[in-house]
Image (tube, rainbow, N blue to C red; front, top):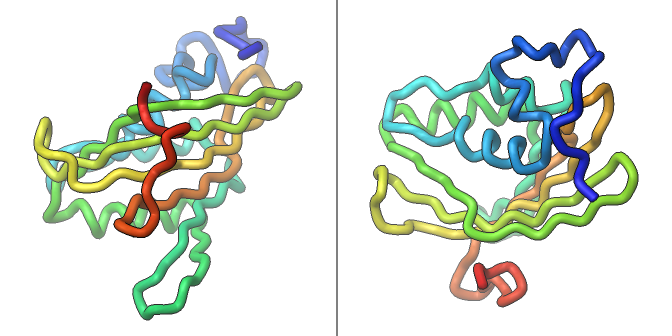
Length: 165
């Protein structure tokens, strides 16, 4: 099943690397994925750690409906960091996973991760959604190669299969 905690021969994933546990398993990777983006307003996010869990060519995609037209928005990891930095300057942001489904074949994995967002630590849930995360296992590490997410709305409820049991 999941490739877990392998000893690394890759110099990029040395045992003394502070982020080694993040990429040694899918559980570690998803845990880090949510931790790096969460924090208080104005707090610097853990972008060095985030870069380590992503492939250098990773992309983020979401659907925008701001102008009444549904459009796909695709960002590089660097652009995603810039957008997030702008958002969290004045707003706390805490995101946590509430359900996960993982499918693995060989060196690829697909993670469906249902999340909740809070705008203050331990505050009320402001929104929910689903992350579709594609992973690749190479050079003794799991890494994110792409991510697509969609938020729950009145007309787009999270299906029971993605809700916590």
